[in-house]
Amino acid sequence: MTDEPLAAWWALISRARWFGGKGLAGTFTGLTSLPWLTPAGSLPAVRPEIATIDYPDGRTEQYLLLVGHTASPEAPVVTRVHDPELGPLSVVEAAGDPGCMQALLTALADVHHPAMQWVDAGGIDPTVPTRVWPGEQSNTTVCLGDDRLFKLFRKLEAGRNLDVEVLAALNGSSITPALYGTLVGELPGGGLADLGMFVERVQGVQDGWQWACEACAADRDINAEADQLGHALRAVHERLAAAFGTSVVAGAEVAELIRARFDAAQAEIGELTPVRDSVDSALQALVGTQLVTQRVHGDFHLGQTLRSADGWTIIDFEGEPLKSLTERRRPDSVWRDVAGMLRSFDYVRGAHPDPTSAQAAAWSAAARHAFLDGYCQGDRPDRAALDAYELDKAVYEVVYEARNRPDWLHIPLGAVQAVASRTASSPTHDSKEN
Image 1 (spheres, rainbow, N blue to C red):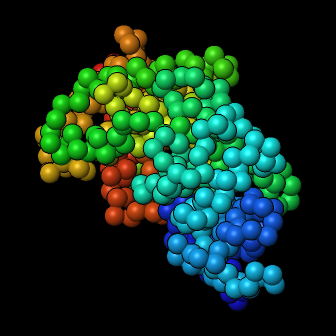
Image 2: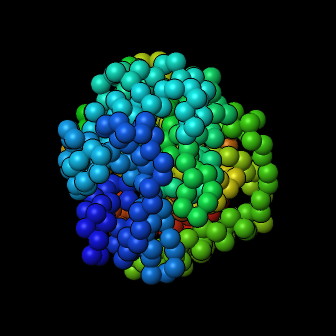
C-alpha cells in the first residue's frame, strides 16, 4: 500500500478489536467519504468514511470510520491534511476526541438533521463529557454523560441493523435499553445502512461478564441470579416472537447448516479434525425433528448483559459478528441463545483461582443448571437441539479465538471435544446436564 493516508488508517483498522478480518490476508482497497455531519466550514469537522477490505476468496467487507478533522486534536493523530481554507488539520478517530464529539452531537441533536432518524432527541446534551467505553467490543460505544450511549456500528451491510430493529420493536421493555435515534448513511455502491444509534445507558448496573468473573473468583453462589437471567431471556424471546412471528424448520436443515459451518471451521483450524465423526453423530439427533424458529439475540453471552440489584438488562442484539447480516437476520431456534449463555458460564471458569479444579467445574455446572432451569420454567428443554447448538457455538468460538485470542483457543476447543463426545454417545438424554 503506497497511499499514505490509506496506510495510516490500515495500521489502525488492522489492529482494531472490531476488525473481523484478522489473519485472512485482507487488502485495504479504498476509503469512501460520506457527507459531513457537521456544518460546512466549521471545526472540528466530522464525517463517516467507509473502508473497503477485499479478501483473496473474493469477499468484500466494509467498515465504518468516524473521521474528525481538527486544529486541536485531543485523540491520537492518524494523519494530517491541508485544507485550502482552514489550513493544516489533524485527522483523528472522532469517537475518542471530545472536541470532535461535541461538534458532532451539536449537529446531530437537530431533529431535522438529514442523517438522523430520531425517536426522541430531547435527551441528547451536546455539552456532556464523552468517553469511549473501554471494554472489548465488535463495535465502538461512546458514553454521553451518565445516561446516554452513542454506539457506532463498525462492520456495515446495507439494510437495517439488527440491534436497531430489535430495540425499536422492544422499546418500552424494562429488560432492554430504550432506543432514542439512528444515524444512517449510504454505502459505496448504493444502499442505506445504519451507522450508529443513540440508546439509554442503564444506571446502577455492572457488566454481566465482570460480575460473574468476580463471583467465580470468590467461589460465590450465583444460582439465584442465573435463574433470574434465564427468566429474563425467556421474556425477551416471548416479546420477539410476538413482534416478528415464528416459523418452523426441519431439524435436518439446521443440522446441515451447523455441519457446513463445522466444515469451514475445520478447514481453517486443523485441531477440529479429530472430532469430525463425533460431530456428525451428534447432529444426526436433529434429523426427523421440527424446530420452531423466530428472531433471537444471536450472540447471547454474559458480556451482552448488565446486572443490577433489580435484575438483568439484555443488550447488543446484532448477532455473531463473523456472520453476514443475512445469516444473523435468519430466524433461529431459541436454543441458540440458551446454548450461548451455557458456553459463557463455562468461559467464566477462567477467572477461578484454579480453573481446572473440581471446585471451578462445580461452580460453572451449578450456574449452568440454574440458568437453564430459569429459562425452562418447568418445561423440558429440547436436549438434541440444545446440544447441537452448544456444539455449534463452541466451534464458532474456536474460529474466533484462533483469529483474535489464540491463547484462549483451548477453552472452546475443549468444549467442542466434550460436547461432541457426550452427544455422540447419548444424543437424547434428560433435561438435566450430565
